[in-house]
Length: 447
Ligand code: NDP
Image 1 (cartoon, protein in one colour):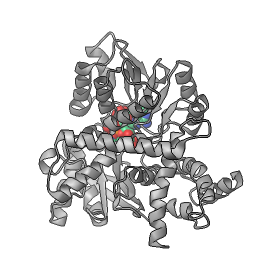
Image 2: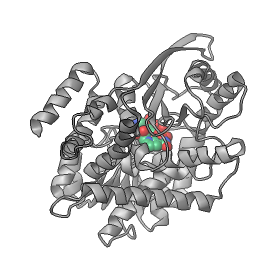
Image 3: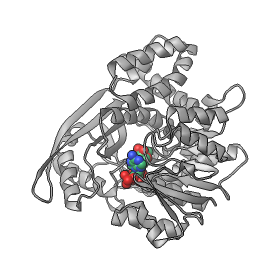
Image 4: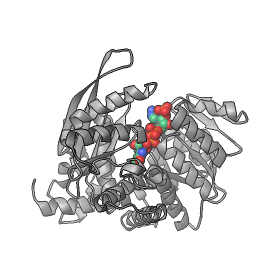
């Protein structure tokens, strides 16, 4: 088996040698899916995984815009249309200076499996730009978004490819992108998700990724006869996913100890309660300043510069910032501090070695493609509401989100149970995600 996996990975490496994040994501899938393919004749000998690692289409384009001082700026835009076997391409746009082909291909590849897990008819894609929104005025953001969409529009459409937000792309950016798409296409369609409520958005979409992650962790804890009640929870990030993960943890009776950004983390031993979380939301979403400012209002909390929060003793850890933010050393510290559950809100936040530590210790570990699928699932619900030209209530969408997270959890158990009864959620998510896409690809022939 090892030689089969190595042979496959060598081939992928030859073609994508300079894309470490993409190779990391492929390796994690190959190690669990290839043994499954070998045991199942219908997939064997069809090069099905090799077809899945090759994007159906990769688009890169120039994005020129004028900054507030009149200087012409040039950025690079991307859209990776990875797989459309089970539905239109679907996946977020990321605006961050680190964006490159490797990062977007890893995200697009993960998205294919994640979208399949939701049971909704969505293929996988991802896109974005190396544009840095930090410190830009609203007018600069608008000019950039308009320029970006003036090219992207020709490659997307409500039945073709439906982007959403990701790091650096929230409600403000989706508004500017949608405005330009609507103007150029001369049509009001659900071409983007994460829209505002008065122009086609869905209730619960802003909350969905963070809430969904906590619903998933709750299912894992319940399977062990446990709950969030009284749990000490460490969260990284302070953006969309982190904020709503924190909100749901509080609703379920847990205590949130930390939040972070790329400069450092805050540790509030007394707990970040509803009032403090509201303050964080204002800091990050309206004032758009650093998390460090928290301690000016709550001076009993500590700010730890340049570090991640994994050194804080906790029961549950929710990495909700970015890829590879939790490494082997962090994993060992979390385990030695008694952490029993890690549920990924971000995409691929744990390194391969960190995951190996969690598996070795047999704690509950949920990979992002399962535990953060609530965001794209609710985007799928937004698409359905757009097609119906109808809005579901907050309670209806929340109920559907809970059901979807529960179904994903069940799929992980179905495909991820080890001989000793331990649930390997990584294996479960990879295989369950693979089966639906592979079956559709086989049915559609070699295209
Ligand atoms: P936001 O832009 O709202 O927030 C990102 C947060 O992560 C910020 O606090 C940011 O800090 C921090 N961060 C970014 N880069 C780094 C870094 N290199 N090191 C440490 N911290 C960093 O993004 P989201 O909350 O939407 O996304 C967070 C993660 O969740 C991403 O991995 C994304 O792909 C994933 N995700 C998001 C979904 C969604 O619906 N939004 C859906 C599924 C997954 P700073 O301000 O300093 O950059």
